[in-house]
Amino acid sequence: MAAIFPVVSSGAFDTTPSYSGGFIPQLWSNKLNAKFYQNTMLSEISNTSWEGEIKNQGDSIRIRTAPSITITDYAGAGTTLSTEVPVPVYTDLQINKGKYFSVQVNDVLAHQADIDLMETFTDDAAKQLKIAIENEAFFQWFSTEGAAAANKNGTAGAISASYDLGTDIAPIQQSTAGNLLKLILRMSAVLDEQNVPEEGRWLIMSPYDRHLLMQTDIAQAYFTGDNSSIIRTGKIGMLDRFTVYVSNLLPHGTTSKATVAGLSAVATGATLTNAKPRRMIVAGTKSACAFASQITKTEPLRNQTDFGDIVRGLSVYGRKTVKDTALVTGLIGSP
Image (cartoon, rainbow, N blue to C red; front, side, top):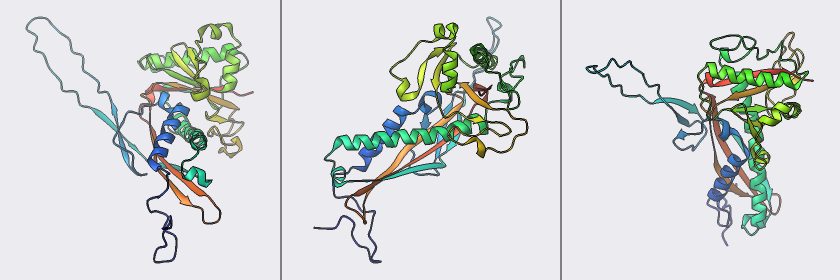
């Protein structure tokens, strides 16, 4: 019987030949990718309508955005009509990030004799990818790149410049749930001043803010629930034209520290003089951020030190803020 991993001329095991057992890498890849998108809210809040196929880290994905159509006055009969040819607008999204998993499984899984075990591993891998990639994407979109200058801080509003959305030094006081609701309404108005369409608007808040908000009769009257989806994506309902999600992965900051990613310890943040404890609330539409991800490789390796197989997978992805005027961020003081 031929060895699963033939010995090459150097005497080392060749870990790249086609696998002779029942493991089907493409089936695993498809399952993992499907379950990743079921778990993550990234496909709910960002533009994933990318062109092309992701094959490797370093690929470039072309994101389509709608062109602006010129509206011209019509002066009546005899008016010479000018016809434009809309030019598609593209944004190139670099696939420059990658994450992997590598797990040992027994021979039963290697031969696909236990489908439930296969489901267990794909479920957990997808959930862990969700946490790691969302945490990273949220920090880049909402903090590193951020909303347009008119869509954040203490004088937000492209027209009025009069909406206080909080700053690192002076976040919105969270002493009452009413303050939180007012902040959300201000964020909605800021998007209105940028002529952002109402359709498809979303808002992400922390579990604490959701708890605080639901103590108000007004908020409870606003919300329309979706009990089946909160476990999967964090979606909890609608509030003032926003589809609302809850996440532990939003950027946050503490006393005298810059904002850090959701899973990062605030102690790791750079020094920011006079900064106050704060957490972020974010709103926008899918046109604001672009995201693309693919499980590009799954493969089995025979474990050379134990009886069993190692299954590993690679996910490559990219994320980018493509329309910062369709993104708005607020900062509210942390308890």
